[in-house]
Amino acid sequence: MKLLLTRRWFTEQSTIGTLDVDGAFVCHTLEDRVRRDDPITVADEGQKVAGTTAIPAGRYRVILTVSDRAAKGSLWSPRSDHKLPLLLDVHGFEGIRIHSGNTDRNTEGCILVGRGRAVDAITDSRVALTTLIETIEAGIAAGDCEIEIVDTGGLTA
Image 1 (cartoon, rainbow, N blue to C red):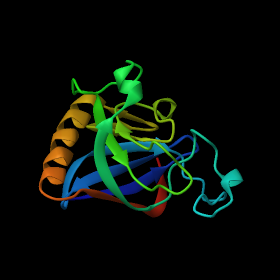
Image 2: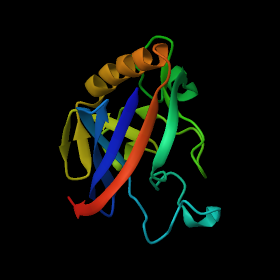
Image 3: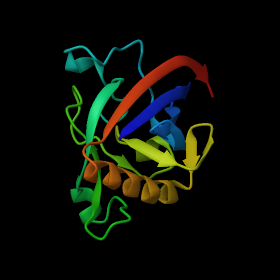
Image 4: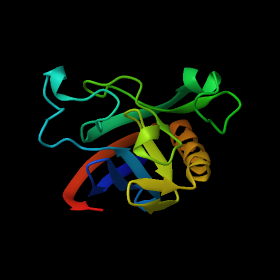
């Protein structure tokens, strides 16, 4: 299964995109801002801002694992086992998950999903996450799940 996150709208606070699964639109995404003037794909770790920088565009394998933060109640999971999607091998970042939230204050470097969007915000996040986790779980059961993240030319919201 292939997830495609296309970053479409860029502001000083956040990056909003769309998420397709095997070519079909599923939901909107919200990430921290992309810092094009401070490349985060290079080895110099001093160029990213922890918790406020979007991860590098690229391809990442996605798995479902128990989130310690969800198990402790500081992050929401629709599952009783507290599993959330986790992106593997993200250069310069650890623990990048797909989870619920509405603004850049909720991201901490992760990817948020939602049904609706506004400037620097998404809505109906828990509904979108519940559906997406079921889809990802089916993809993993069928063999594999990966996400490709691409930047567009950069419209401002």
